[in-house]
Figure 1 (cartoon, rainbow, N blue to C red):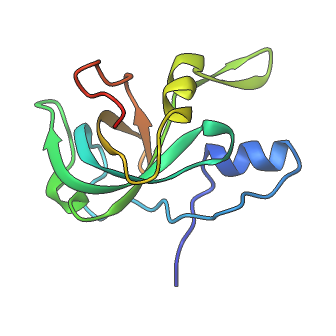
Figure 2 (figure 1 turned 180 degrees about the vertical axis):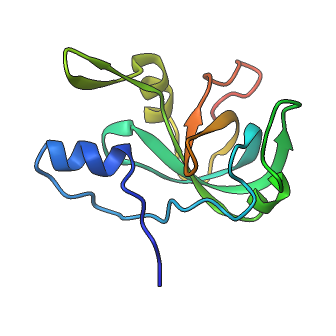
Figure 3 (figure 1 turned 90 degrees about the vertical axis):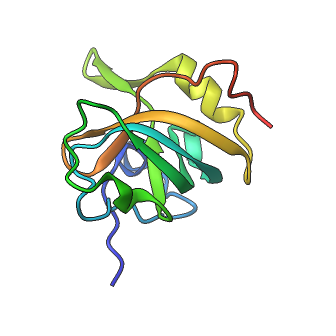
Length: 136
């Protein structure tokens, strides 16, 4: 049985009264809770409204302050990465710079991103990749 998290994309789609075109598995692998670090891989799909993307992870590098008991559990997995958001006047506002960067992603594109787990199951993009990691 596949489990689907109720991430920002689902909440945003429900708020706008629309269904997501492609449900994706957003459950983190066991031992990946508390992860903070860099993921390298390829883009599988960009989510509706450019609020994030799913990637096939080929390499995981944990930061020194990462609390994940088994960061290597992310290698070879399809993981969802969401952009940062905040609440302003009772509404969720997506980070405009990160959203613009995600909008430029293409299926199959190689990416290296710095992420952190928010709570126990959502990977949040921490910063837009530097120019030395250009879109291909």
